[in-house]
Structure formats: structure tokens, C-alpha cells
Length: 451
Picture 1: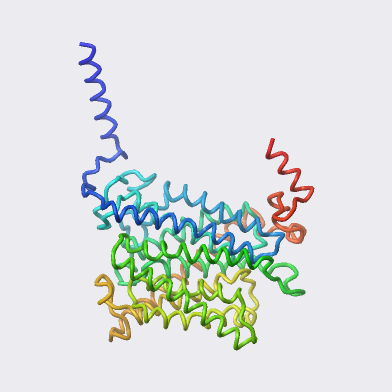
Picture 2: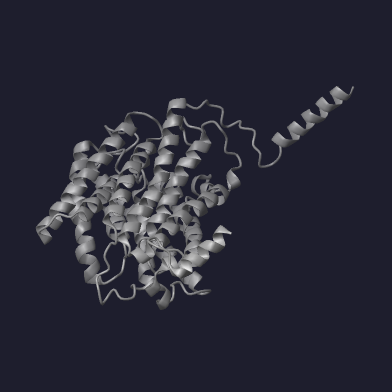
């Protein structure tokens, strides 16, 4: 009798739990996942996550030695902040059911309803939770990229609030517009892995933030140079490596499309490095390591929106064009206009992303990817117009929202550190640490932390 009663109670509790609101019975997710595709996308997600520590090294070598830890701390903070935001709210705003073509619905709030089998809504062969994890890594790297534009001068407390607001109010809507069924999806814009969503949005937002905060102190008196180019080269190598997960993984399966994306990613990066070095060699008389890695990143940025739509030959052309274009943006245009984009986020990601998005409208081939559209060189003039609309919309939305977010935060606190803190360096003044030998203040802070 007791055994039967226990079984009855247990059955009742089980039924109550699985039928509670917000705990779905996965009726819509019955298809079995493909194990090969699943393993591939999990690895790609890890590669994309690796890009953010790689970016920390890339940026860390480019700033002055008194600020290297502060820029790394910002990247680490983004990894933590956006990971939690994505689970609680970000994913559903990006990929929830379409609401007026502008934002996702709230049915996935807290990831409720996300199961262990493929989602019927996206037609993938990977578990829905793996798709969530893969897309999370894009949100992380995008917010991290912005930090380079205002490096060496923003308060860390302001940065934390800015990242949460920017990811929620800028990145998530853009991701929905382009990938989640929003109005740019319906318009037919092509963005394989994030030319608009990742690179243009971060580049434009970084430029606006740099303008709002103003130039770094002392920049008028002396050139501010990278303190460790080997650190930057190491970071660039990790970015190049991780970018294969970024672009090839966007095929969402271990298939021929992923192979195409892998190949053109490497090719465009190589061509970008060559063309940037050639441009500076002609301009300044010497090829530099810094130019080589900058050109490689420019090539990687340019191919991102096009990776699943263009041929290897097209990727060579894109790389050869984007190197000099971004070189001129950072060596001529920035100095001419006088804005202080510390680590050239707009010059590489904004300009390179814009070029890549428009070049997709020129070189895209439906023969390579039936889900795409033929571009201008195949006789279709419509796609380049659609791509231009997507670029313009991203510029306006990301720029305006970034400005409003910063102005709103500025109502409650100063956005910048004080002049004294900036002179001392953000590592010591904000974090109580030094990358190359501890100051007295840093040692006191570390001692307290160790206790």
C-alpha cells in the first residue's frame, strides 16, 4: 500500500512539474540532432569565445603599459555580463517570435522552452541549446570590440552599465532584424556571420562613444604608441584562429558551406594583410608587423558578411581592396577629422564591415549557396541596394542608440575617469594592479584580495 501510494505521489509530482507554465513539454522539438553537426558547432562556439581573450591580448598590446590590464578587464567583464544577459533576456529578444519585424518575443525568457533537440523554427540539425550557445559568443565579441574605441579613459562602472544597456538595446534588436526574422531578413539582406550585426554596429558605436567621451589627455602633445607589439601579434593570431569558428560555424553544420566559409575566410585575411602592408610600404617606405596584423583583421572583417556567399577568387579581390581602404581610414581620415578612436575600431570594423556588406551585394553567387541571391556581377542590381539599406539602417540605429545610452548614463555620473586617474593609468587607479610590477597601491589591493 505504501509503495503504491509513493508511486502515485511521485507520478503526480512528475506530472505537475512537466506541465508547469514555463517548463515546456518539447512537442515542437522532436527531431533528433545530428551528432557530427552538433560536435562541429560546439567546437566553433568555443573558437568564437576564444576570440574575446584573443581580442584582450590584441588590444592589450596596443594600449600604453599603464592601461593594459584595464582593457583586458573590460573584455573579461563582457564575457561574464553578456553570458548572463543572453540567458535571461538577450536570446529571446534576438531570436524569439517576430514582433512587428523589430524585436523578438519573450517566450524564451530565461531560456524557457529551449530544449535538447533541434528547433523547428530554425531548421537546423543541432540542439536548440547549442544554437543558443553559438549565438551567445557573437554577442560577447561584439560588445568587446567597442571597448577599443574609448580605451584608456572610461570609468569601469560606466562600462558595465553601458555593456548591459548596449547589448539589450542595440545588439539584440539588430540580431533580430538580420537573423531572427526581422525586417532586414524579410527585405532580403545577406549577412552570413555578422558584417552589420557585429562589425558595423561595434564600429559605429565605438566611434560615437569616442566622440562623446572626447580625446585622451596628452594626445595633442605626443604620439600614443602600442607598448607591446608581440602581445598584439599573439592576439591577432588567436583572432584569426577563432574566426574560422565565427564564419565556418555560421553554416550551422559540418557541410560544404562551412568548408567554403573556412576557405574564403583564410584567403581574404591573407589578401588583406598583403594589401595593407603594400599600401603602407608605398606610403611610408617600410612594411610593418603592426600593419600586417591590422590588414589581416581588416580582411577577416570584410569577409564576415560574405563568407557563405562568395567564391575564393572573389575573396582575394575583397581582401586586396579592403586593406588599403582601412589603411587610409586609420592613417588619413582619422587624423584629418581629429577624433580619438583609440584602437581604430571604426577604421577597421566600421569601414571594413561596411565594405564587406556592400561587396556581398556585388560578389554573392546563388550557385555557391542556393539560400543566397546573385549579386551585381551576376546581373542582379537589387541586392546591392538591399545591402546599402541594411548598412544605412545599422549606422543610424547603432549610432543614435549609443549616443542616447551614454547621455542617459551621463545624467547620473561622469563617463570618464579624472585627469589624475588617466595620467596614473587605469590599471592602478581603477583596479589596483600593474601588469609589469606592482605599485604600492596595487600591492595593498592584492594583499586585501588574497586575505
